[in-house]
Figure (cartoon, rainbow, N blue to C red):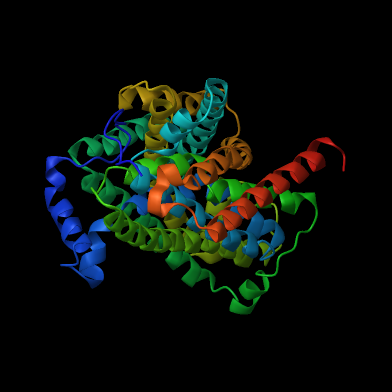
Length: 439
């Protein structure tokens, strides 16, 4: 296998800066076996937590709350399955960056013919825009719910805040990772308290682990949950986060580095999964149990309902979590869009310009007075259709021994990945038939 590439560097990748020197030294000591346990793991935690923000973005709030309010605990199994899928997918993405020194967009550009590359780029850009609509609108809605700020001015505040978050990237990957981890912590605490206040029935939650649907509506929400949880843009991003973050010059070091990154993925995706599960469980307990089955797809009504039914400032906690989710995930969406454009086209653009491009559709949605919740739901369905266009190339490149060397996919890994892709494509196909074919 050739050494990881140093050419065509992508600013979206988390490359080390001088301020990260201590972390890099600690990572090198861990790889050399001079640090063990939590001390050995600590320098490698971070990339998956940045990716995990996309798994708890405002789109998840809508799909999970709607699923719980309308169908109770019926779709708990979908959330669990989506999280398990995300662990496999994000591990593969991280492995690509470690083994090849390339991110997925760069690997696709080198592997496929130009028409295919352009097609993949166009759909990835559309997915990035759909993602940003959900994240940007969600943050603006959080400001509106908490402080009564109208949506358009709230969107302007969100834009300024997201620029400030992205500026952290210029000061080193650890600074950005710390900020994002802080946002994740806020979301986790907010939902943990809400679950405590809601007091769900553990037996009812466990009953939702049995796979089943209840008509076209539940299938639509299942696909939305899948699209909101298995995010295609972070499949591209995670490979960029690991591609030059910690140098690993020989195959043994790369294998050890990958093992550390798998632990990072499992921890981060488990946290994201518990947050998603808590959303659905809260809605099922509070709203479905009270017969408020149509409340879940309107986050304003969810906010008001939590305040009136649950109390204990559950509404404020929900608003804070939504704001933290929107601000952090919109910034990560911009980084993903940057990786996509620069990887596919070899075109570098300033991050502020990329932020402006990706947030423009969200401003249009708000300026036209389109229902922000409707925009959120539609964006999640669009995302689910983008998953195969990232997942299939990821499976192909990580199964290429010339590119991956000793970290090439095992046969079992490829089979699991193909099964995930088949499930996603099948769900989307059935959904299309139900929506447009009169099935």
